[in-house]
Length: 262
Image 1 (cartoon, rainbow, N blue to C red):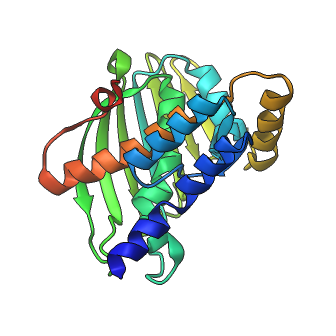
Image 2: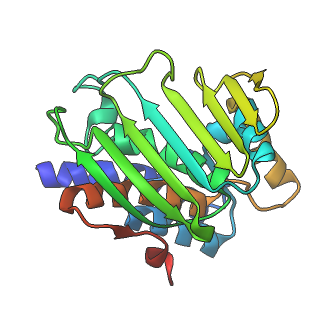
């Protein structure tokens, strides 16, 4: 009975996306696109076969200061991304291995997508430590990882629910290039830009995203243009934390880009 439940529950969103695509309906799907690479790929095949548009709802790409950081540092060499929360209750859906996969996947897909978005590159491989420390469902609750991106961009990623740091806040990111650093904290609503030879500058923003992603979804349908966040973005945002968890489990670096080869 457990096996049947997991099989059915894990594929619920996948099946709905595939059925919608086969019915000719465009799709706005919440993150993560799916909890397995196989299900992400199944959705992708359905979208490509039917020609419908699928938009993966990564609202954080529309945060004011994420866009500003990307503009100020178009070619980063190093990025740090941290998303830490207080421990999630063991009974909530997001900590269920089937329904949500735990914090490292269910919210880690957000932070991994932002890493890739700011890097402007795809990840090649990952090495990680961490795993399950205390959540009774056995999900990975805290992971620290290093990603190597195309162009030799280096990125560190800390994801978990051991505790929310008061200064850095739940969302914290730093972006570095030669002579410039950008620091985002206060849930990405405050940004400090430090350039060599200049006084640091502080910017304030807001948590935007829901309205903007809906507009972008509607626009791509009306204008018949590719979705700005598609099923490939959804696949990579699932693949990155999954491979980090796999690396933490056996202590070996794990490929990412190589798994996308046809």
